[in-house]
Amino acid sequence: MNAWRMSRNLLPLDIAITNTAFSRVVKITTFVLSKRYEMQASYIDHLLNNSGFSCYT
Image 1 (cartoon, rainbow, N blue to C red):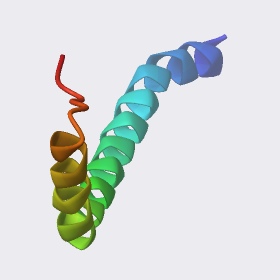
Image 2: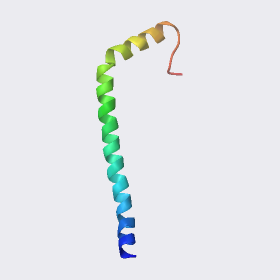
Image 3: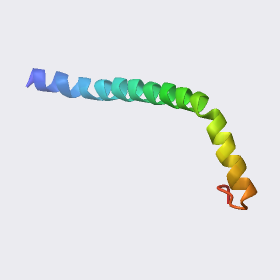
Image 4: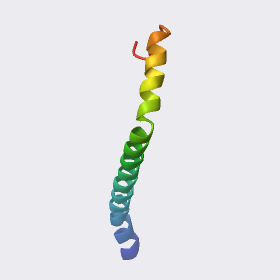
């Protein structure tokens, strides 16, 4: 019973650590991808804007 209560108390902490690590990985990945594909993305935006189609409604 004591061990179960302890593990139950530690579970939210584990979830918080996992979420923090996951969000950090997502941020780093997003940053790297945005840097790598910055030219392609701006070029695609340029094409979309010139074709009259806009993502921002």
